[in-house]
Length: 225
Image (tube, rainbow, N blue to C red; front, side, top):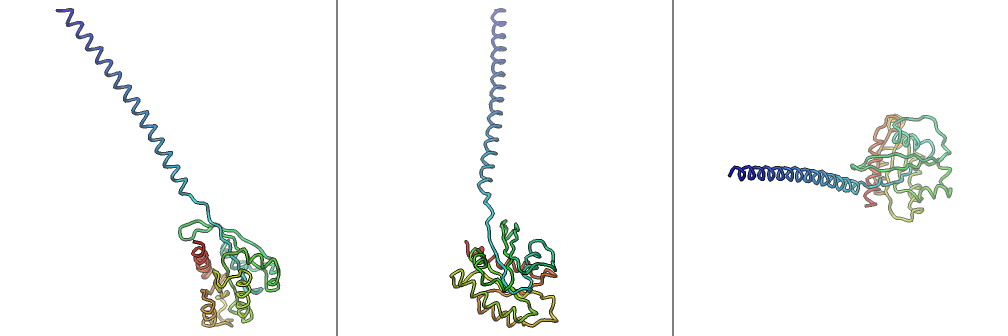
């Protein structure tokens, strides 16, 4: 009887040991699987995030207007937030800027054209043809520059071979009110005729510069949707 009890106790101890060992192995296995599943979950999550990332869309805008109306100053104010007083009016240039519009990052290229003496050039036509949005600039201190706006619009529509394009008319140098030669009502009437927006800006003080570009970008983005 004594031997039987001892044998039974030894057998029970062995079974408990095996069960504990098996339990530890199961726990270790489960932890390993849990870690593996967690890694898989993170990988899937990362892959989903990667799929959500979209490349930045590119848009090209162009400023057009007579020499001295402030096209380059408007461009510099928007791109670099600085006001320049010296520039070469015979050079066509381009500026690039990453810009957040409507919660999305965009890549903008802004073509800054030379003065009116370049309007008939093939290079100028090529620039117009490649652009998505058009900023027609005159100075509120110059009636002559205002009168050129209608010719500019006709040229754009002819080159693009379209009846309508994203466009905004800009009366620059609003900081020079005492020298005004073009009334707001006259400029607004022309904008209504063209079915576009009229905005007065000052590259010197930065007035309405951001409003101007948000407006033209809104037109361009809507057209490309």
